[in-house]
Length: 281
Image 1: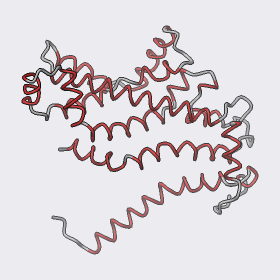
Image 2: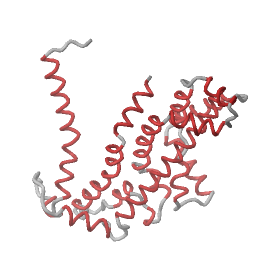
Image 3: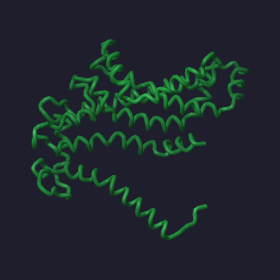
Image 4: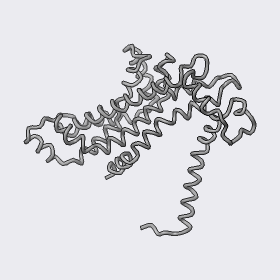
C-alpha cells in the first residue's frame, strides 16, 4: 500500500498539471490562431486571446480548402473517415480470424505461422513501405480506396493480442460446442465474439486513430486531390513561399481533424479502458 504523504501528493499533482499544460498549450495556440485573420497570426507576439473568425475560417476550408489545387477539406475528412473505418474493420476481422485459427485449430506448423506473422513487428515501416508501394502500383491500385486501405489491414500486434486472449479461454468451451454440433464459425460467432467485446472496443479505438493519423502512406499512394486525406492534406496547405501560407485556415483545418478521433475516444471511453484492463489479466 502506498503511504499517503502530503509532499508526494503535492508533487504528483504539480507534475500532472505541468503535463496537462505542456500538452494543451500548443492546442490552445492553434485554437486561437484559427479564430484570427491571417494578418493577426503574423503579429509579433501573436495574441493569446481568441478572435471572432473561427466559423468563417472553418466554413471556408470546409467548402474550398486552402490553396489553388486543394480539394474541399470536408471531402478530405470524409476520405480519412472512410479510410480509418475500412482499415479498422478489416484489421480487426483479419486479426481475429487469424488468431482464432491459430489457437483453436490443430494443424501442422501453426506456431511457425504465428511467429512468421509476429516477426514482422521487428521490421521498420521504412523497410516495408517501398516494396508495398511497388506491389500496389503493379496491381494498378494507386489512387484508389483499395490501395489506400488494403495493405494496412494486416496487423501482427492485433493478431498477437487476440491470440493471447483466446488462449485464456478454456478448451472445454470448444469441446462442448462440438458435442452440441456447432460448427467452428458458429462457435466463433456465438461464444468467442461476445466474450471478446471489451478487447474489440479497445482495439477499435486504437486502430481507428492509427488509420486516421496515416500520413506517409496516403502521401505515397494518392496523387488525386479528390482522394486526399485530412492529415496529409494539411501538409499540402503549407506553401513553400515565405508568408504565403494561410496559417489561420491551416489551424482551423487542424482543429477539424481532431474532432472525429476525440468523438470516438469519448464515445467508447469506458469500453476502451475496460478492454485494456481485461487484456492485462
